Picture (cartoon, one colour):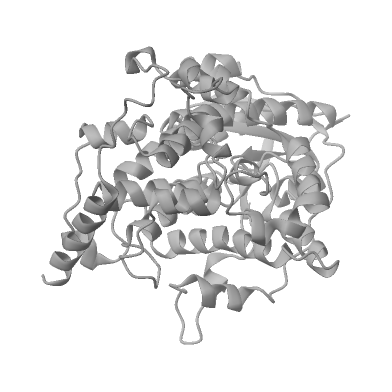
Length: 473
């Protein structure tokens, strides 16, 4: 069926047919032209996020075809592309779902003004967060700076019910031309690691819904007690789907609320973790430089190592620090594109405190390696651990990898999964690391000869001494 009036649905990080406000509104007006633009912001993504984006695009294109539509791919400056597609398709409107990072806000503001000046209807919609950042304020006004009061402020707020799935999308009178996705080369920077990481990724809306169902059916009950244990499967594994909008936070919120209503012990803590993501985005909205500058300005004088070629930083990136738990986590990251949240805290603490390396270097490595990269969560997480961010805990909270291993990997199963074993047969997942890494790393299967690059006691003492010097400034 063709309809003369068409609306461009500008796809960004919302690869779903369910609970998609912009798509629903566009469909209500008539024909829909879904368009994804590979612009400068997409080109600037790290290797793993760009690779994961390609998988999301493939899955969403198939979903659109199943409801009678198609995904138009164009490369270039977003405003120019949207103008061209509007002319090619006869579209009179452009709808999109809002993003909240500073670069997207700046781009979208310019685009909205440009489209309106052309006489087009240009509207943005909510859907990437539970609550718009400007709607949650302290009693005295202004944003929350600490998580716990933020949680108390929003936990009772109403979250709109998810919008129904778009089951039919009408085609425009004429379809504009489209690029071939494979010509964009979004996976090129992954090198041979793409094949390895791809084995651990489940992309698309259907996969995200299945993961949520599995979590609610069998894992949420033990979530609070088990979520920090590295050696068990206890989390939802929804981080990459949420990052790319293959599932909406409202869908996850309402599923968690149902679990809470049904008496699942871990449901409230799961909801708290979802709101932790929310808190990160609210902080980025109000403090848009949180991913580049110390959130606490007094930390500008801290003695960070900022050399990306420093041998300790290189060893950390490559999982060759000689600290088994740290190295296992860094290898998990390189093989799967993800890392357990507890492991993220341990590796970040080790880098910034035991090694004294700037959190920005760690943030950039994660930005390159994470398939679930989320700019707000990544920035807040690194600053939270480093001590320069929004956290009431003192700097001397330093994670000891050996103590953490005893508490959260007591039988060594996590380390066995990701590290080569000189006594027994090395696991398949540990071997995958050697298939994924660049040949130039020249790594081998021997870990026993990796001497720790930094003693834990000495590293802790160095960190505390540096902190004392900061306080005396």
